[in-house]
Image (tube, rainbow, N blue to C red; front, side, top):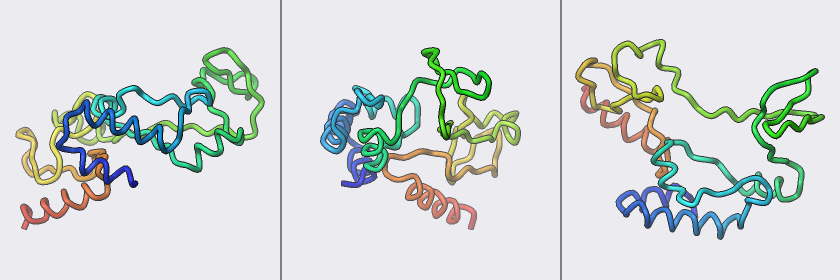
Length: 165
């Protein structure tokens, strides 16, 4: 079942219900991944609402971690002599290091002084909506949606096009 379908259907359900559904679906799809370094949050939807990020766990990654082809480790603290040192002080010899740094809007230098961004740099208004301190300024594509971010961008763009016309 595509996760976007759950996001669309569950958008009107109580948060606690969506938390239980999402946790059950993840367990059914991947099993318990805590032993391989990918613990699931107890309340996944609540965590999404708080942080507005979606962890991407697909079957390819899960099988690679379970098979030992990919190893999940604690946070990188520093490098010593070109070797990564982890938060637990382990020093690793690696062939490759993949840094999954997440997503930032990067809008602060452009419009940060206008008061149109929240504390994380995400616009306070989206699509056809305007912030009172910046009439005519619109943001499309900065909301993360469990119902499909690209789907939401399309809806925002269509609405903005109608307003602009």
